[in-house]
Length: 366
Image (cartoon, rainbow, N blue to C red; front, side, top):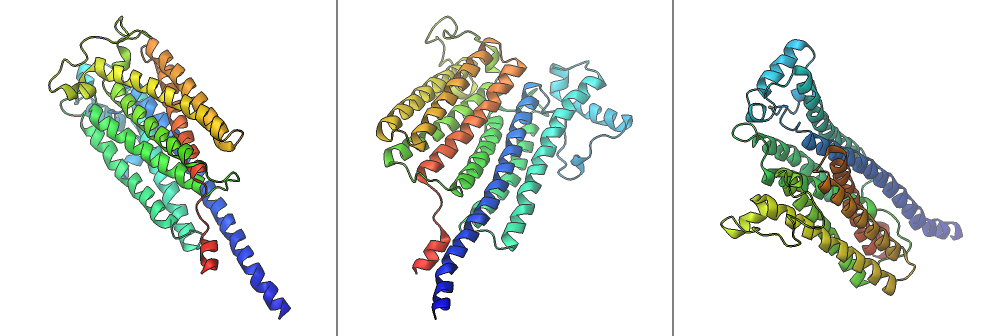
């Protein structure tokens, strides 16, 4: 009887150990996914900044994995590119070698995207079949995979906007493509950090709520940045802190209806992105101060401070990008660090909420 009782007592402990082991495996898999997603963001940013996004004029999800293998195939791809407006208006007279440079950027972006799909799908099947996934994780992870597949379609929808009448893709579609990518990245981080142990426990309600709103502000600021990129607005009004010689420039609402200025007026779009940066900076500063006052010395307070410092660095990178007229290296660094800030903001919010509840504990309480 004693041995039987000891066995029953140890069963929940073994089950919890197994749950933590499985959570650790799934968490590290998601961290790898995040690293590859970050690489995809960086290559995507480079593709945009080098004007390479329209170099592949067809969407071939399967056959498109194989690049041109000989000169005849390269010339065929080049002929397709020379038939679109961007070649005529921007790159007319470019050599085959110059075309190959922009082709490889876009090809790398597409192949990385396909690679992420495989990296999510194959381990997901393994963890599911082997019983390593908790029930609440299954719809979350299937949703991530579905969003990834939809993102491939959105990417082509974006590219197609620059193949017939425009020399560049639509800024609306560019923003949609980037924001869906950000949502996928954010959701992946939230799931991964929800599976991590958090010794400090949940933060106070006010800290948790403000951390969530900071994440929203980061997403909005990235969306505004996408509009700036789509309109090449970072190449105009390249002074700071003044813009067009003023703190509050004129002619921000020239277009009718008035609201369209926030999407199509280059000056208004850049001004809005600047203002969004100031709001995010002040909000992150307030959050850091408030969290240190209410929860001093806790991991939540330390993360709030780190987040503010990251926002400060990102703001400085934004200024450098602006005054260099969005030259490649500063602009790409600004783009990449925005994703790092986004990931940390998501991790901070999830940590403020605490870990996912244990399914093992729920079962034993019944």
